[in-house]
Length: 482
Image 1 (cartoon, one colour):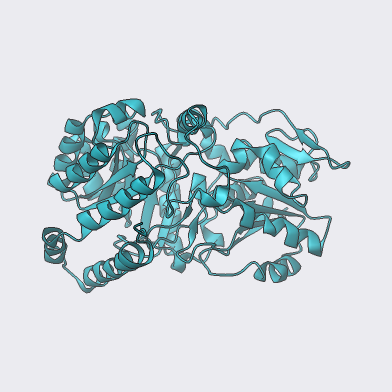
Image 2: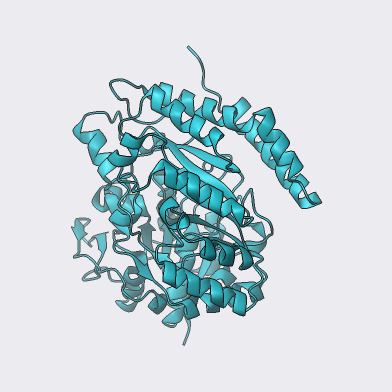
């Protein structure tokens, strides 16, 4: 018997460009993204797998306002409302709890997200209308809360407010061992045609995760510290999901795994099965230079299976910084990975970050110049944002480099919330702005992109991305020089 009492809400956008809250997102989008709310979809799918129904409202990407929540609550009449959060939107996201309690004091309000996982008791103190803060993997926690008839007492993995208003913390919920016990994310409960990626080949876009956690230990990343040990679904289970989303009308997939090739044998098997089953989806993924630089045969299979671009996490071109953050790669591996990936006809995107421990004006320049020296198709140039619970955050606190705990300021589109003795927040922000301009506005780069246009879709995509880039980084977000 399916019981409908549960409502999941992706809160409205705070930034004019939309916000990213899924799986530890840091708030404001930096490009024309519209990601499906995968964390809420995964919880919803877990509930369905166990006989409980739910509704999902993505107010972020449908451009709804907080005022619209009143009608949603009255329509759905939920017993529980679960909403996602991010570090830089947390204060606004908590407004949902206020709206819910205005309508009915009996509805349970639950907040999830990496920021909530880091400081669950503090989050509850921010808003008296929030009943539960989830500090472990949310799927089993939410499921057990429902099975316990919405009584938070003895439900593992949460902090909650008891009947006397006191904040209590229950014991931790162990991470799920078999990811297939979660069922399939609810790809069918969202308006699929609104989701997009600025470099996507086709639409609609779906996000899936084949594994959870990461084999790496990068000190700035929340993956290994919040999601625990690396766990993988079976290839058979992943293929079932790919077939289903194809039937639903999706035409493109982004793999939200930290590294798709963490287990090379498993990835070979996945590619073989995608090819064998004629999965008609174009796709992109995140990956690591070390794995990519040592398996040309796998790259050929990835291309045949529909891969058109791989995002390579490099972060910095300075050897000492790479060592400081425990990245586990060399620049030679990055060069080799780019060469090998492009040799099979797959494009490359480098993930770069400014402001990591050991950063100087010189090292920031090194990173930008390295990106321009290799034949990479795109870069993302971010500013290191400290995530609670990571060694990077602890490093900033211990050395008194952190300037504020005002979470509104922890925004990737703003100057960072820390100063180093030799490098200011404003200097990092200026380098970020100038680095993006110097990479993307090179005449040689613009010509190279123009020569790659093969269709009207390519022309439209490149033009839209160029206009968006000018709006964000040449006009709107340009630093103010003193």
